[in-house]
Length: 158
Image (cartoon, rainbow, N blue to C red; front, side, top):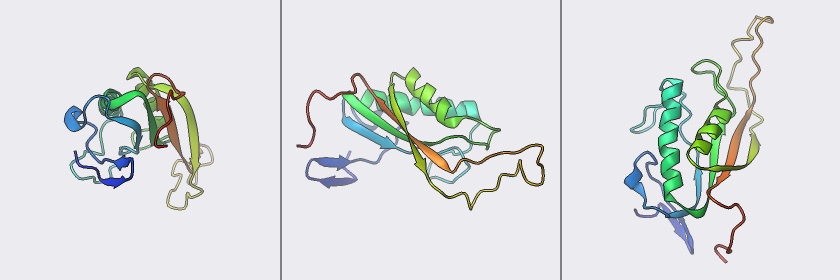
């Protein structure tokens, strides 16, 4: 596959993570991804409105592929929402973290990305119903995983 961007020793690739043949085994050091959030947004060639269990199974497929493509000390930074209410209230961040661990990834930590912006969202479960409040967290998660050992044995790009 041809790099999407290249500078010195840095190479960025853009491909379909649901297709195993996209890359070969042991291809990358770091994968940074923000998969479709299953919010009915139109993406080229992607179904972004699946039943929640089907969505998690789809995530399991590409997370397995990312694990296969990673070098022995690969890392994965996964940008996902904390939660979702598109298919009922779901703890998407926690659920996709569990799926990644099932695929072999080891959990390192979670970075909270505070967007400080909820102006485009309305908590309809709370609208004129104090008896059913629903809080919207204006944050996303960047969950960091690693393949075998978190501490690198050698330095990269130096």
